Image (cartoon, rainbow, N blue to C red; front, top):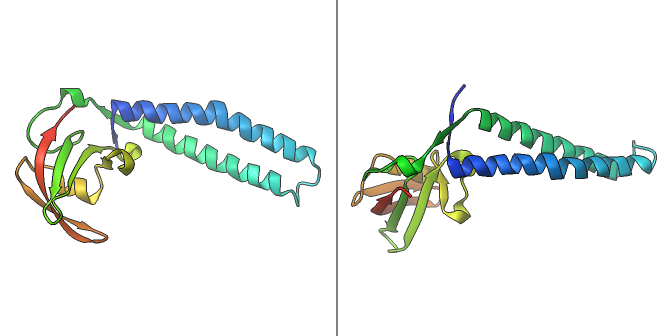
Length: 157
């Protein structure tokens, strides 16, 4: 089984999501199924079928997250240091074309959230950054075309 790299913060967030799904969503869906059953004929009961579908999606999500937790390789970024980009690093970049500054933290796939500036270790940008240092230029192939970034800072928080 392949290990799934995660930060301690990401592991806690996944655990919290599993707990929420089990303690809040499951009982809500069970109640919706029971209510829909009370309406009678199940063959043409849209509420029943929707609730059963929601139950299937929720159970699949719980199984997926529990699998990732069981294979988690928790990396304590507070113990990491150096000038080279690696998992857990927070990297400040400047787009060489637009001079726009962006900051990303490289995290595991499960905890990636672009809106929170957390990118997956498997993303094209992260793969291009790994092993590079402050001052290096990096070319990244993106769906919108190639982008060039200069690494301004590498930090481990």
